[in-house]
Length: 407
Image (cartoon, rainbow, N blue to C red; front, top):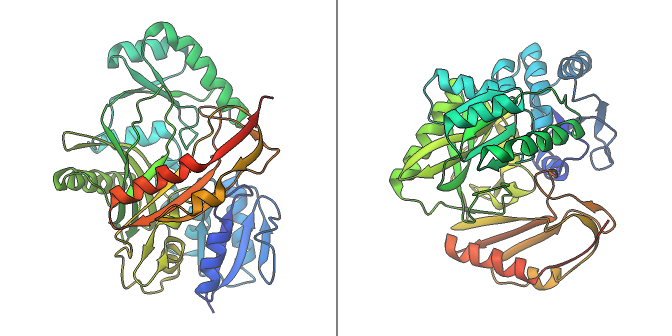
């Protein structure tokens, strides 16, 4: 029986979905996590406790484990585990992305420079170490600009700046966010020219160095700043064929330029006048619970697809099964403590809604972007076309009421 080691961060949304996919495939599971996760450690599954913040040490622990128990694949569920998975897979001779390629996706400055070396379309950028450097960079690029930390994800710490006078406060704020996240406050900042236009997300799978696009998600809500909180994803895209082809070409060029060769890819791009610019590309699948909006072939989940590829199990059909599908990441409207959520049953009853998951329990503190990195939950919808899906998601959201008390 095939045996997979799943790398799960203790706060991952996706533990249950990946574990379910592995069990549906009938494979043995060992979970490697930064703590003994009760979701991952039930039943017959083994658990290896590792420190995902130290990839070399974590990879060594997996290799040591594999010396006694045959391992056929090492799969990272989230960003936190991709470096460990690449290092361990390389040592064990398993299908993997090169560690250098994965490392480039985890540092926005390295990624930008690598994309620039290969002339991949992306926003003009500069790296800044201080307020004065950030102001100089912005003056050269032209306002408005987007300032972001090189080491965070999910739009955390990403802020649009419209004039030089605002830059000192923004840099100080981002430095504080980076330090609170446990990273060094000395990390450089990325200053990018702001590109107006629509934004899309791309889900793909790289097999033997070749990228196959699984889905292009439209983001119908404008993402113009000052913060960049994502809400609705809908697929298939409603963009013109020429724009979608540009998205495919730029995403493939970005994956190739970074050296990604095996496994899932998630990318974010800006589109304007059928031109595409790469914003972010990661060596992992879509975050949160958003993967639940995707089904392939005869109802195969994205998690199953990823595990099949990693284990060398044949994949016969990458076509999506739904005419249209989408997800809404429920935004945090303001800081405070969540007291209760009303209207969940009503939201679930909306025509086209396939599910509503509230992922923050009452009593927990809410931290909105740019400081925060979580959502209140997720709404899923399926329908005859993208317009119907988007309408269902908005109608379900309108039914939800969040009782938040000030801290």
